[in-house]
Each structure stands twice: as structure tokens, then as C-alpha cells.
Amino acid sequence: MAAKALTHPEEWIRRAVVYQIYPRSFQDSNADGIGDLNGITRRLDDLAALGVTVLWLCPFFQSPMKDNGYDISDYYAIQPEFGTMQDMDRLITEARARDIDVIIDMVLNHTSDKHAWFRKALADPESPFRDYYIFRDDLTGLADLRSNFGGSAWTQTPDGAWYFHAFAKEQPDLNWENEAVRREIYAMMSWWLDKGVRGFRMDAITFIKKDPAFPPLPPDGPDGRTDVGKACLNRPGILDFLHEMKDNTYGPRGALTVAEAPGVPAADLPDYIGPDGVFSMVFDFSYTDIDLVPGDLWARRRPWTFAEFKQRLFVNQLAVEKTGWAANYLENHDQPRSISKYFTPSQIEKYHDRLAKLLGTLFFFLRGTPFIYQGQEIGLTNTRFEDIDELDDVNSHGQFARCLDEGLTPEQALDSINRRSRDHARYPMQWEDVPGFGFTEGTPWLAFGRTCPDRTVAGQRGDPDSVWNYYKSMIALRNRSAWSDVLFDGDFEPDDTGDELISYRRTNGGSVVHVTVNVTEHEVDASEWLPECGTILLDNCADAAGARYTPFEARVWTDAEA
Ligand code: GLC
Ligand code: CA
Image (cartoon, rainbow, N blue to C red):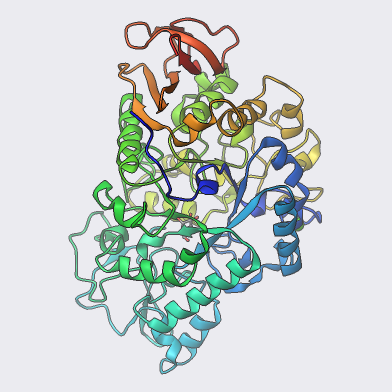
């Protein structure tokens, strides 16, 4: 079958390899222990050497940092500890000089409670800014919702009124029904595009439309409340806002947009992506949250298997393929490290590098644009927290409190934090084998990881077998090899291989490339399912050959006949 002539999204977006940066933890340039924009600029050569083409910067805007920048108090200003607007301009220019584009995080569901709009709304109930947010005089007859970070989604102000927040109480939700709010947002987004950013990651965007009546819902937890997602995600009418936003901002400019869009079922994908959609791509959570019960405590482990993982991954790929383009990822600033999530401590001890490469291989060649999270390219794992006071993440503290409220012991609560905390992804980056890891010459804002101090970018760059060099090879194979066309625009087709192998092929005209990984700790013979192996393009084991897959082997290969 001839490959489909894909025109959406634009080619530079389809060809992109995105690298996500959490500025606070990436590179400090002035020894205050906090990563900053000049630090990112300093590391551009390392990123160019890896081969990434787009940087996604998590928020660096002015913020009280209650949620590390996802609480913005001024969208037009840089938080001083991250630098200045000149530093930002320089970063964009220097990145461009290396053929790297910058996209930024747009937090549009809420602002900080310290944003001038919210301050004015609080100071004077008659001010026009009161209607920039969602205030109610009393809560009678309204849904008693549990915020995403635990506790009520309604908080009372000193004047007795209540305001709504889907996340922390310091993150009041904007009232998108108000046209003045929408105009302010579009002007701000256009201002950033004019500055030279090439697109946006849209934070929590499926939350923006609410039913102003907030009709009550059946409680789903011992606190008598209902998960806020059940009331506020992907509500009828949201598409009017999203189309208006697109038409007034990034649409006419061909920008890259990737949405954090929980709550969008496969049937609704054509509204969100593809030629009639509003974004270039959306993130799928089905396989990254496979260990969670949605809206429930992190402590409640959801048993899962690789068979189910495969099924979720493939269902999503096939659904997206019908409509548009995928955003493929394993990690981000909200997720624990992928190796730690999917494998056991003893497997990691024995096969650390191999597992890092296996997961990389598995996701990187799926149909779509790959997103790499900082540190993933050197195989970082979860750290270990010995006390709740070691945690910074607002969500970890909320979860900890919820666990205690629901009767868990402090040890059980801490255990769940160790499994799922967002701070596993947020401990500082490990660049060099020196005190401070080359991240800082000061005291880091969050303790360094405890589990893999031997993993640094400098150490791995010199080692041809390292995870870093494997990521570099994956990028080169996808972007600059004889197989690039099939790996970009080829169709995705599952291979039928039972539960022990996850295998798929990318096809384009006559070209076929297979990606096969053995997710077990024993050898697996693939000859029952797969054609004879021809050329091996990439492999995470030195002695790969034939139809036998060694434990946790991952292979990119072509049919013998091809
Ligand atoms: C998104 C972000 C997360 C943040 C939340 C509230 O989920 O990824 O880090 O806490 O939105 O803005
Ligand atoms: Ca700094």
C-alpha cells in the first residue's frame, strides 16, 4: 500500500525531535542553586550534539512558584531567578543558530493568585476582574469537587465568597466565558509568537470549559467529594474556545502545538488533531498512567502487565493514525522516571542501560514526534525520599495528606510518594562527574538524586555504548539515514507476537522497518511470529542476531527479503 500523502502537521513538526527542559533543574549559571535561562543557553551545544531539533521549556514566567511556575503572576515577565527578557531573547537566537526551535508552556486554565487580575478581583468585588475568575457567593447546590492536588476545588475569600481552582488554591481558574479574558490570552500568545517562539505546549487545556451551574455529582471518595476531572474535562463548547484561540494566535503562523489533553476519548480525536483539529498533537496518558486509577490515590497500585501496556500503546497509535499525528513520550516533569515505573529494582540493578535503551527504542520509532525529557537520555531513575519534608512538589504534599486522611500510615503514604512523586523528574540534571554535577556550584534548590550518581552526560558522551550515545543514534537513524522516510511518514502496523515481545513495523511504499523488544528477563524466540531478520539497524545488545531475543533486547531491523 502506498504511503498516505501527509500534510498535517507541517513537515518540520513531523520531523521534530523535541527535548523537554525543566528550567529550574537543568543548568544553573550563577551558583544560586537554581537552573536558569543562561544555563540553558550554555548547554545548547550539548543538545545540538545529541541531535534534538526543538526545545520545550517548562514555565519561566514571573511566578510565586507554588507549583514551580505553573502558577503565573505575569505572562509578560521572566521570573528573576531564571533571568531576564534579554536572556530569553538570546536563548531563542542562540538556539536558532543551531537549527533548534523553542516552544514554551502556555498555562491558560489558571493564573497565580498573585496575578494582578486576581488581586484586583479580590480587592474589589465590583471590579471587572471579578469576572475574570469563577466566583460564587455560596456553594449550595454546586458540585463538591476535589481539586487535582487534593482538598476542595473551592476556596473561600476573606469577603466570604468562593472561587474555583481545579489545581492548588493558589491557582484560581480563569473564566473563559468572559470574552475580555480570552482577548487578553490571545494577545499574550501572539506577543510570544512575535518574539520568535515556534509554538506552545498547552497546559491542562481540556479543563478550560466549565458548566457554570456546576451540577452536583455522586461522590467518588471517602472525603465525599468528586474528582474535578469528572466535571471539568473536555466539556461541550470547549471547541468553540479552542478554534477561536487557534484562529487568533498560532493557526495562521504554522506553529507547533502539543496539548496536555486528558479526558479526550479516541472518538473525539478528530476535533483536536488532524486537518480539522486545533493542535498539531496531543499527549496520550493511557500507557504512562497505566499504574494509576484515575483521580485516585497514588498509593492505590493498579496491577498492570506488558500485554496491557502494548494494547494501550497500539490502540492509541492506531486511533491517532486515522486522524492525525502523535506526540510520543515516556517521561515528563509530572511523571516518575520510566525505568523505575516499568521495571523492578532488581531488574534495574542488573540491566539498567539495557532497559533505558529498550524503553527508548520502543517509543522513539512510533509514528509521531518523539519527546525526550531531560535526563532520560542518560537513563536517570527515581531517587529515594526518606521524609515528606524532602519533597518540594505541591502535588506530592497534597497526595501525602490525602493518604493520611484516607487512613494510610505515614510509611504507606511515603511509599506512594516514592512511587509517583513528580520530584523524581525534577531533581537536578547530572552533567559532569564533579561535586554539584556541573549543574551548580551552589546548593541545589532540590536535593540531587540518590540512586545513580555515576550517570552524567559528560561521562556518557565519551562512551560509545552509553545510553546517551544510543539516543544520539536513534535520532540519527530517524532523522538522517536511508530509513528516515519510513521512520517519519511510514504507517504504523502492529506485529502479532504474543505477550513477551512488543513489536511493530513502519511501512512506506516497499520499505519496512520493524521495532521489536523483548519485555521479559528470559530469551525469546521470535521465529514463530516474525519474518527472518535481515539487517539490524540498531540494537541494545552487543551479540544480537537471528530470531533469538536475549533478555530485554530491543532491536530495530529490516526483513531479510527487503
Ligand atoms: C499540568 C502540568 C503540571 C501542573 C498542572 C497545573 O498538569 O504539567 O505540572 O502542575 O498542569 O498547571
Ligand atoms: Ca541560577
